[in-house]
Structures are given as C-alpha cells and as structure tokens.
Length: 230
Ligand SMILES: N[C@@H](CCC(=O)N[C@@H](CS(=O)(=O)O)C(=O)NCC(=O)O)C(=O)O
Image (tube, rainbow, N blue to C red):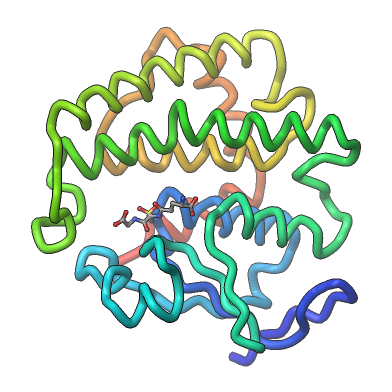
C-alpha cells in the first residue's frame, strides 16, 4: 500500500516506520498515530529486535545510530527517531487533537512530564528488562549488569508511586487533559507486561488512570494489535 501523508506542513509522500509493533516504545507512536487518525497513512516495516536486526551495521549507519525503534523515514530519505521527537512531529501535522500542549507553559509541562515518565518509569523498566532478565537474548544483550538492572526495577516501582501521588490530584499525567505524557506512561505499562511485573496494588490512582486511558479508541486499537501479534 503506498501511503502518503499530505499535510501542508508535512514532508509529503510515503512515510515508513521501522517498528516492532507490540513494543513499549513503538506503542507511543502507534497510539499517537491512532489519536491523529494517521495510522492508516503510514507503512510499517517490521524489524525483529530478538534477531538483533536493529543492531546491524547497516541499520545503525542508515537508519538510527542509537540502534533503537521506532524510526520514521520520509520519502526524501529524512529520518526521525526518538519517540518524543516522532510524536511531537505527528502532533504538529494538524490540530486535532493537540497532545503536546497549546500554550508555551502547557508545552513545557507536557514535555517535562513525558521526560519524567521516561526517566522514572519507562526507561527504568527498560533497563531492568535488558540487564536483569534475559532481555532480547544473548546475541543482542552483549552486556548486562544484574545489580544495575535490579536498581532500575526498584526505581521504576518508586516512579509508579510518584505518578500515583500525582494522579490522586489530577486526572492525567501532565494535568487535566490527555497528552503525550500519558501515552509515554502507557508504554511503561506495556513494558510491565513484557517483564511480568505487576504495578503496586496500593497505587490505586495510577491503576484507575490506566483503566481510564484504556477507554480511548486509540489505546484499544494498539492493544488489539499487540494482543494478536504473532
Ligand atoms: N530513546 C528511545 C528508546 C527506544 C527503545 O528503547 N526502543 C526499543 C523498542 S521496544 O523494546 O520498546 O519494543 C528498542 O529499540 N530496544 C532495542 C534495544 O534496546 O536493543 C526512544 O525514545 O525512541
């Protein structure tokens, strides 16, 4: 299917996302695309993380020096990686809905909370996965540090308690509206299921938040795909 995104301020033409569809970070871009009704306009190219296809010299040289997914490639060969950057690009394509803020302060607040979710939760669980579990397997996980991984797991649990305390006072991660910060936090929950770690039962506000965001069609579309992914 030749997919194009023809928006005035976009780079027109075929857009391809190199992806591991059910993955915790890819879920952020998948959900953002569904929110913006752009998901069907993008082609996805599967990259098998467990075979190390994201770490080949070719991929590192031509797609993403950092060797991570997702990567967005445009018709002219331009590339975007880093979920925060890709979802910001997607959000700027049109004004409905705005997920990265409408005022300078709101934009700063959502960016801050997206980074905080990454540092204190999503990235912490990712480092636990790669260091203190078999991760992507011995051919990919060239270096592991068990103690560091376990520390990161504990950091992620502390992060969930922090987010829970926030959500006792506000309905969403960055305030009173659903935003990219919530989508990043959904990525953290996806990683929890990958590492088979339960969110703390006492984090009732966080668990209620997860139920709330799961009511969104964009989130249901992601989990429908992820749960049937072979
Ligand atoms: N900072 C990057 C991290 C992306 C990332 O870690 N992606 C995972 C994909 S997934 O595990 O979420 O599906 C990856 O490429 N992991 C491969 C690796 O770390 O070797 C971003 O925000 O995009």
